[in-house]
Length: 107
Image (cartoon, rainbow, N blue to C red; front, side):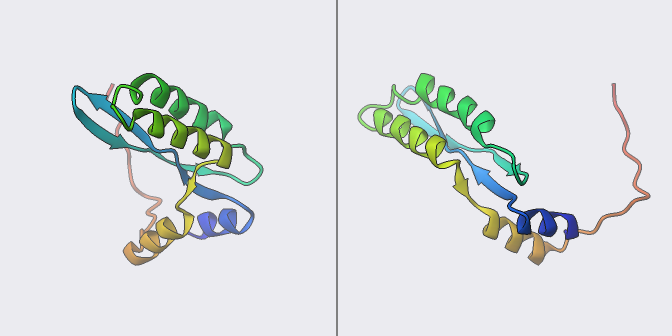
């Protein structure tokens, strides 16, 4: 938590790029949360989501083109900022780091 708070104070943020995928007449809203470090650009994250929306969202009639325009908006804006919400959630759940944890590699 300390490192995350320091990075956020230096300009880091948690951002989301909304995706809308259509399957027949149903729509599914998906999104990933990315931590963007200070002095890092969000373009590399946004471009993937823009092309996903461009290829899959337009089929939802009549709202598909609106979802693509929304994707362009968040591409230009740098994502939807969820930093404060995520910090509040982390603070409420109080994650604890244990340096003695062993992670198994199942290959």
